[in-house]
Image (cartoon, rainbow, N blue to C red; front, side):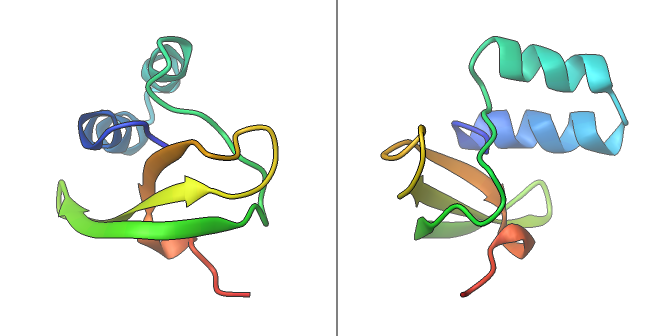
Length: 79
């Protein structure tokens, strides 16, 4: 998850460019963080960022519970 919309925009570019170093830099400075597959989230907002449908979510489970961030809307699966 990207912490801010600006971080999400930067992450999209790095992923699209296959820039592993750039992705690592975003994570190292705290601009993104990982959660395990299957982690429950609450969808807070939706938007189109850099022509990509995205959602702002709050993490409900695990060590990052309470944190919020942006991710690809396609990554959200209703259980």
